[in-house]
Image (cartoon, rainbow, N blue to C red; front, top):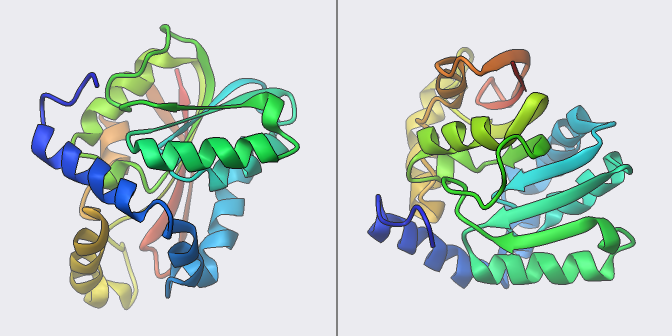
Amino acid sequence: MKGMREFPDRKAKIAKRYDKWSTIYDKFDAKAPLLGRYGAKWRIMAVRELKGCKGTVLDMGCGTGKMLLLMAKECPSATVIGVDISEKMVNIASEKAKKSEYRDRIIVKVMDCTSMDFDDESIDCAFASYTFTSATDPEKIVVELSRVLKRGGRVVILDWGRPICGPMIILYPLLGAIAYLFGYTRISINVKSLFDACEKFRLVKEIRFFGSMGYILVYSKV
């Protein structure tokens, strides 16, 4: 897979871990202390920022495809493409898509987000939920996204990060350690700063929740 050579060991570990979790991921996600109780609400909030997108909508790090169905519903005139580094996750997502009413508009592929098999400026909108903080090289994903996204295209990001205020500042170190232990997730990564440093993106909206530790970012490619 292209892009694996930079961090082969860690990327392989991430793919292997998510392959292993693929059969229980949805059940765990539904019952997790944070994601299970509030996750569905946050996902809906984030996906609604894509409402009305047409053409091609990309879900980077689609996992088992939970977001793909929501995206297809919110974007009835779009083709939704989901990509993920975990083959077993992609297989589950593909089966979900085939059984859904949106099966004719959903495509799922095994792909590394740092080196995507899409033409330049071929994607109309993009979405990423908890993808950048799980990646080995999130900077490369930003660069690759700037290549494949059309000018004026929208990017919606749902993720965790360092809280900017409130009591979660105290719990942040512990939660960060737990996140890394279970999914190699590094919530210390400042995704906003990665996009702000790229001259091709302009921040349109920022929504904070869960003590400012969770966030939704909406960017436009200029």
